[in-house]
Image (cartoon, rainbow, N blue to C red):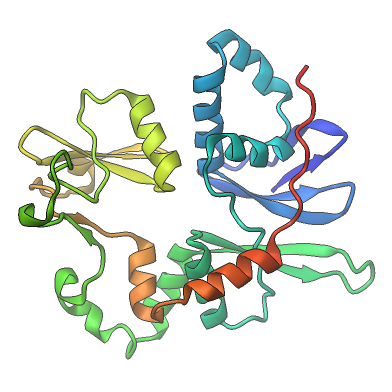
Length: 269
């Protein structure tokens, strides 16, 4: 968890190797303030790349306030994440729908202290943990998952050549990169599309690597077989298949009910 105070520009993260997200806690208000994720850091990198020199960015990031992240997203024109949360006693189905409505990958679980009435961060439910529970305990619901992915229509697949317009990538709508692609171009894909991984392909469309927001994963290390890029599947795709579609109207209502006023960006030192 990362604790911060509007009066204190320096966050104090609890060191935990391998952690890719953390709840934000407003110490002054004793209140949950959102989630800090790898995508937030990607947005920050993109902002500095566009607006500042390396020396300025290196110095400025030392006093950068977490509350300014939302303003960074506004300046980049990317969607701001809704301040979503669920109570630990909520049903798994409700939690799943909340994740799907917001396209989030994790959901904070908050309770209340009976003595002080303050919020208490109990845990963070991730898509991975949710799907792991379903795979172990909901055998009837996952029986069809033994069928081929394409038959189940799970995932995003390369459009047929006949449907592509002039100038479109032959791998549309999947974001791809080559080994010669500048790193920042991939960073821009992460930020613009709110995705966490981009396949790295060669001139023949053979997948040679997978560049993620947190690491570069080699196919050989995972024991994967090389082949031409045909599609990509995410945990969100699997969850959407199991739970079903969520109306856009529900998403709008959730975003409206859980949004909070944006904090003003403090002057830079």
